[in-house]
Image 1 (cartoon, rainbow, N blue to C red):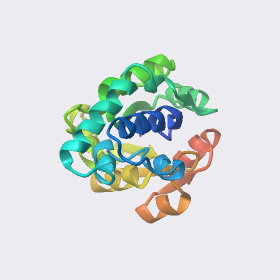
Image 2 (cartoon, helix red, strand yellow; image 1 turned 120 degrees about the vertical axis):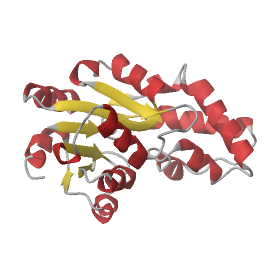
Image 3 (cartoon, rainbow, N blue to C red; image 1 turned 180 degrees about the vertical axis):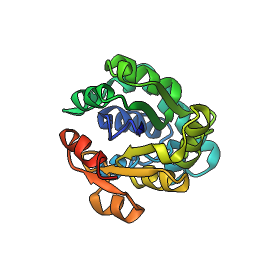
Length: 212
């Protein structure tokens, strides 16, 4: 089976780095910074979409993205940690002959560095993400790209993620979806989006996978 995994909120907890980079960008532009709880909800959606909600113009949002990336590229991507149990989960799945892919809206160049830095690369056949120009930032387009580029049939794939974007993107590509509750989405959010199953911890993933 081909198992597609979201990165932020599913394999790693990037909250410290992402929120610090958002604050940096908005402070540089003298734009009011949302409350911490609201910033946590920026983890998962395309970054430019989120900046558009607080910036005055698309041009200012574009500048915010660039300021964010300037800090993230050198500091923010390492202000991150792998969730407990994830390496064991990935090892078990790899040993069971599943083919694993990272499928994240984060720019691919950053996702690859994170996966390598946290020693997760050996488990994955490839890392797919968005382009810096915004191409494939939305999960439906990204999943479609992975299926096409890796020659994966939808019925042989399962998408796993912590936000409704992951579930909805999978459904738009006729791919089954597992929602994980240890990230930044809620069980209600994931169920409403149409998740085929929910997983409460990495240790439970193999059991949940067998049910979808």
